[in-house]
Structures are given as structure tokens and as C-alpha cells.
Image 1 (cartoon, rainbow, N blue to C red):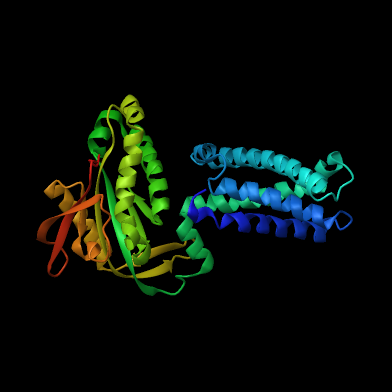
Image 2 (cartoon, rainbow, N blue to C red):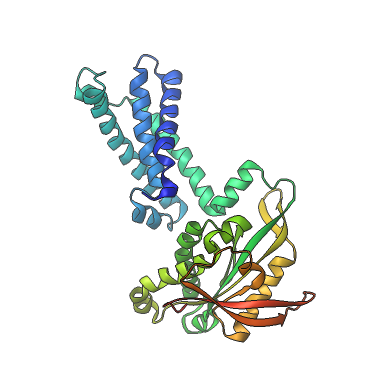
Length: 343
């Protein structure tokens, strides 16, 4: 288990135990309190470990790509299986460990109301996590907490990541096949962004816009590492890409940072958006990377904010360049990783 998941060890059972306590108090006070709490702790642990990709990560990532009805059905079946397994574990604990049940068989028996309660709670969890997937985990959390209900000024890092060759791919294969191809590429981008603490703000055609708070993005060069992590993910599946499409996807990346106004806008469709010169400048940097034929380009404004550049990352000065729509020239660098060529 990775260090950033250690918090789940006490939290997951505690949340499950609270759910078990609620069930006991609301539906079945004739049963044992300890039995409801232990069962809740076991069920909650398995489900939350699953949702944090500590259990069956390959299966979870696979079904997340399915249409919502199929995703919901597959997740419900997965949850139901976990509920059964958790109940067996709880029964063993209640009988052998705690000795509060008359027999192991009695300990493992789950009441119909208990199973129905678990399934109903699972449906709520499935809905919440599906909405979270649809709008993005960071956006979901920020909207839920209302952090940007009133506009605030903050510093952020932005990454524009453009897939190279999508136009020629579409000419050869058609628009429908191109959309499937782009969807598969952006699916591969999700894990590197999550590992870096970033958030995918939007997709525009063949371009993805990713953002971090300045603290998250510059800590241990997380925003730069995200780019090369993505390159590594693509390279690991190179045989599959070549077999399916004849080539490995290539991309360009441009990064910049600075102050923006972040705000929640919209009434029927809420969205967190960013106002300021930084976003436009990052878009111009992405165009400059094409002109200079540099796969990964970043402003020195960003690289100066990174206290310690990792030893495996190298920067090469590209001088200063005039950026359309921006007063004054911008100093930029090319970023590369030792022993790795970005696709």
C-alpha cells in the first residue's frame, strides 16, 4: 500500500462502522450492536479499498470506460459480491475473534433487511462516484464544498497537452475511429494526472487542459513529472498501440503558471472556470512548441517556482519569445527526461 493511501486503514472501517451503527439504530435494534458495526466495517473497508484502486484495480478501470447503465450494473454486481465476502469475514470475526455469536453459521447469516440496506447504500455510492467520474474528482469536491462559489484569486499551474497527428489520423481512418483513438489516449492520461495531484479541466478536440494549484503542481515538479509519466504509460503499451493503430501516439505539452481568478459559474450546468492571462499564454506556448519543434516546453516563470528540479529532468534554455496578446517577451525552456524521448 502506497503512503498516500495509509489514511484509508483507519478511515474506511470507521465509515463502514458508522453505516452499520446507523442501520442498527434505524432498522434492527433487536440484533446485536457489535454485529452491525463489525459487518459495516468489513463492507465499508472492501468497497472503499476498491474505489481507491487497492482492490481489483484493473477491473474497476475497465468498467469505468463502459456506458453508464453497464457500468452501474457491473459495479452493483461487484459491490454485492464484496458484501457477501465482507459478511463472511465479519462472521468469522464475530464467532472466532470476538465470540459474540453462538456459531460461525449464525455469525455469517445476513438478514434480508441488512442485505437490502447494503445494496441501497451501494446504489447511492455508485451514483456519487459516477458523477465524480463525469465531472472530475477535484471539480466534484470543489463544487460540493463550495470553495469557488465566490470568485477567488489564486496561483495555478496549467498544462496544455495536444495530441500530434490527429488530423492526418482522421483523414486516414475517419472521424468516428479518430474519436475512439483520442478517447483511448485520454483514458491513458487519467492515471498520470491523478498521481500528480492534478485535475483534467477540459478536453477540446485533440487537446487536454490540466491544472494544479501552484503548491501541488510545483512540489517535486509534479506537473512536469505528469508529462513524462504519461509518456511512460504510452510507451509501456507500445506493442498494443502499434498493433491496433500502426503507431504510438505522440503529443506536445506546454506548461505555465501564474495568478488567475477561479470561480464557479453556471446555473443548470455548474463549472469551475479560470480567468486571466495565464491560460491564454499557456495556449500560445503550445503553439510555440510546434513552431520550435519541441515536445515539452515550459515558461521559466514555472521552472523558477520549482525549488528542486528532479535529477532525471533536464531543462534547456530556448531564449525569450514574443507571445501574441501578451505584453513583453516570455522566457521559455525545453524540458526532457534522461533516457526518455516523449512520443
